[in-house]
Image 1: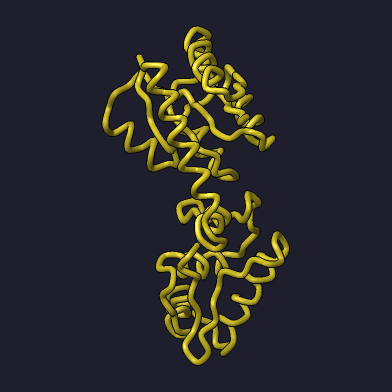
Image 2 (image 1 turned 180 degrees about the vertical axis):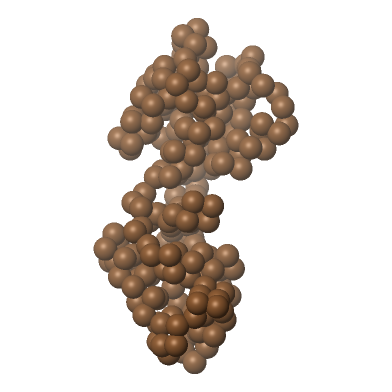
Length: 229
């Protein structure tokens, strides 16, 4: 039996969703406020989240972003709006599916089943594919990166180096290309600056997971980020 979290402020809708979930043999937990639901997701015992976009304390879109900062639990949005732009925004920030109110309980149950099946299939992929892709998250807009849900405390140049490699996984960057892209006109004169920053990045990865090393060294050529992340 899997536990599904329902974050919905309207009692009647929440009752319908919970009944639909329980009828399919799953356990359902209901939260009427977004921030309460966020804390429940942090507990890590939910297999899927059914999330209302219009919550009283926080936008469902913002809540989904907060969840994606530390978790890849599947999310299905519920919304009263049927606007294509809203759907695109919801999917782009990390939702797995989108159901418009009023909805058929049978349709919602079918979508939950499909998303759970897809999530289970992804979890069975070989290590280094879906599992690793979900472990390392990079947000260029905020200049932040996280590994396994934990924020990486990176310097300005460490982040710029990681973001450069992540922009084109598998591409090999020479030390000269990295120096130009990351340091530009502020390029220091030390020959091993890039090597030192790669070493520092690896050390910070190991602080969280000593087996995680996504940066490949190509002797005589440069560095690349693994393309299976």
